[in-house]
Image (cartoon, rainbow, N blue to C red; front, side, top):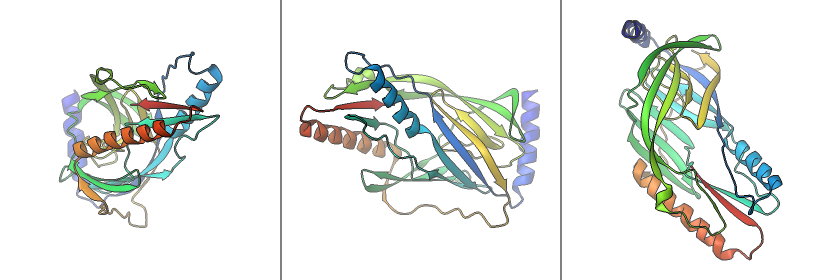
Length: 273
């Protein structure tokens, strides 16, 4: 039954893709926060402040401008980084995001323009193959009937928290298999989606990786004004893996500088993801 539905959907998508199809989708992000802090270091009031700062940091709005084979994903309204409060400084490492993310599904590649400590990088690499498994389950998102798809991915991550000069051990990082759940709308004939997600027979309207949920709350199809999709070109060209190495190094250097300047007042909390 799933295979039959898949063949029908693919046929419809391929037929409609021949048309000049474009649109703008708006997404909101929300990240699960399960941060447990040692009460000997941080009292309950401080914990509440930290949770509120982190909540604001990860609630963002993005737009996806797309046509048949290309898209640009960009943050529309930034709420800013967590601000110090009552001597608490929160450092978030490992959540590097793109200023502009261009995807080309036909050529299976992406270009991400990223600002890392005031230096612009242009990350160029191939799109990840999610090997989606199409499921029977459906649900409504707005006016669209969406179909469920899942993907198993192995990632290397840490959810540890360090306070002031605590050092991170390599053993804190571990490889973990996660299940990504996506909901796509075959009525919208593009194999695209928010962030780096793509590869389904219809626009991805919602996706959840267990930590972050991305949900489409508005969509405009074939607007009167042509959707402009421009591939970013400014920045030092680099691969995804190399950018990860640089981000790790720069984050550690920044932490060391703050530790050396510390006069014992206040508190620095570093959260990795």
